[in-house]
Image (cartoon, rainbow, N blue to C red):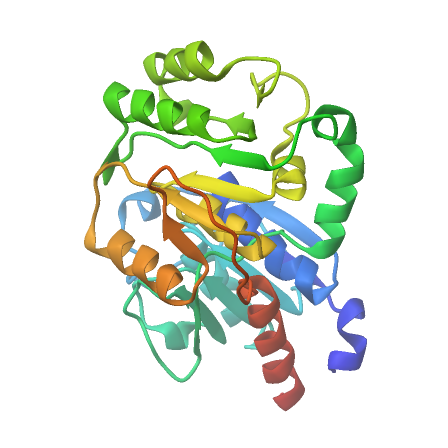
Length: 315
């Protein structure tokens, strides 16, 4: 069956959240197939019920999904769980179902579950990823490097990509942390390629602009096409704030040196994640100094795709 995998139909079942949907897209790209993305919402009362309750029907979600059912489903997000179970049942168990992240239900409800190292779910049909599967690949980086050459090629080497998240449930990015980070960055003999997020906050963003906005650097202001992939492609080293699992995973998939910028707060899961990547040699904590090293880059999307192929071969 693997020989014909490009002929298989695939649905991505998504809540419409960019982070989890990109994980699904990364796995599908690694499989080499074209997906049909189904962005769903749960209806009352299923939108208030935990996914462990298994009496979903065709009226449990919108939009209405009808046969022919796909050969493969790649799903992520709590709302995707009952929809995936419903399709698996309606297809007569023929649809091969894959769930990304920890479903917090019995993993045997799916054919394959891919959970990050920092989550505890394990099982015979569970594959453990080092980080979050993503769309970072040699091909995509090469295309992005060519596309964004007009923005970044003229910047002096080394080029440092600085990926800034911000406040979250686990972390707080204070103005003091932001000022200190900018001071450290300005001490480096390098050009800075900076992007922030909505969670960065206006006060922190103003500090970044005030201290780092000059002709040697590039700060994306949110206008035009997002140069995120281009930043990763052109960077010699990547700095990422500690709050973002997805951005740290993206950075670690490039094979380039990754520094994690400490923030205020934290959690057990984040500590496990960061320590795991440090143990793998992928990332180090940023202390104001830069080094260069090599490591085996993360290949989570590729590894999940290979496990899907292996299991399909056994069917």
